[in-house]
Length: 112
Image (cartoon, rainbow, N blue to C red; front, top):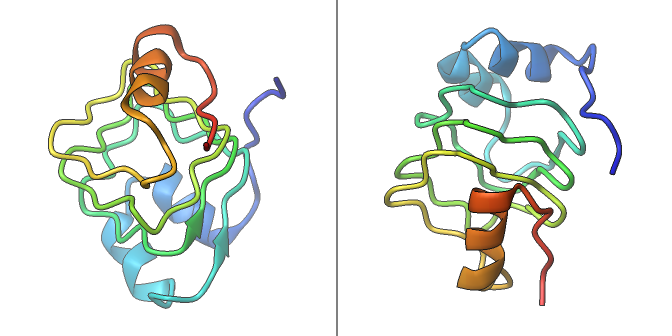
């Protein structure tokens, strides 16, 4: 497992700085955004528009993901240890067991 990345990408910086609304304005909904392997731990992402984001191998430990529709987000290999996920819709490719293992034990989520 690789160490989470701190990118020098302007869109990523907006998320890290808690400027989720500005991220949503600058990221065109529907266009791909590569956030693979980045460190998003302990961030409040409840207002994030996650459509078509590539969050593969992301580190989302203790992030606030409540109420997000992640069904169109690539989360393969991401870890959500201790995250707040009440009301979150995950991609169909992730089983409830995979989500629970990641939430409780920090394992990387595998698509079926």
